[in-house]
Length: 371
Image 1 (tube, rainbow, N blue to C red):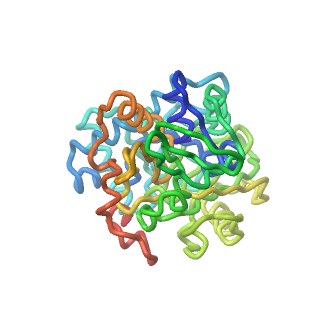
Image 2: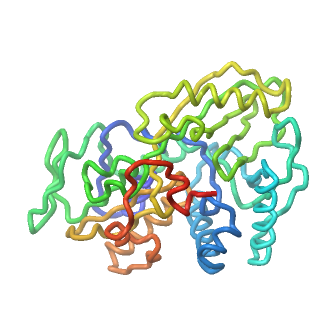
Image 3: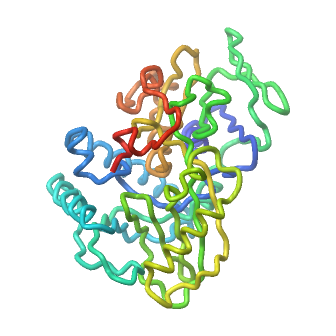
């Protein structure tokens, strides 16, 4: 979705989108479709760590990206527009969510506190509802947007060579010349951008879909356990994701096959926590992708240090819908107008100074992810 976003912003210029497989073959086509705002942690914690100005700015960046998506949505691409629920699954999370609700309300965000949210669990729990969030049919939307730009699939980029007057892009099929190149490879960046090795953690995202036995209790995106568990209902199914952390050996690294261990953990969690008789534990389908979580929690956007006319947009931290379109607009301004409006904490200049991930419990290693 980041590559399609960049290509779309250059659609009236000489642009070509290259994809090594078919469009949306990775996590961009295998995700929950959530349009949710926030850093990936609760608002009050972002405020405590970074200050209220940055916490507000992150929310506003996400809302701007979502607006750009909504403005381009065609019929049938939005599944629900009634906000999201962040569920307090523990007493600690209830305290954190309540503090976030109060902080966001003070900042003027139209959030609501729901004392007993019916989201399909056997016991309704308190929740923060954000009415600006929504649910998107991600695959339909991004394929539709990609149809408006020139693109070549099954054209893996092998190397980019600086020839002085231009950049030579060597693919599995041909050689192309370009004035500028933008790398939108997310978890697959290291092969072409070795300086990104260790600057993000490749993480599996896996989901399962189960048939409903009753009408769905809601159609909203639902997030629980600090974003580690999430789900939504269609008219006939439950789509459930997360819990990768319970099988750490299957969570970290490029996901090349479905994890049966994670699938079992997901179905067991559903059987234990969801309303009895709501779903059947018979999995209809399951899917997975690989995300790129940067060690400090923000994407890399902008010029690649030390590379002429080469740019990057990656490290979306599982929040691609909240970053891709807005960050792509920044890159477009940078290339076409030489105007840099990229916040410093998003800037690709950070690549040089960030600590490297070399294994271990990444959640406890990095403050951004240590809930």
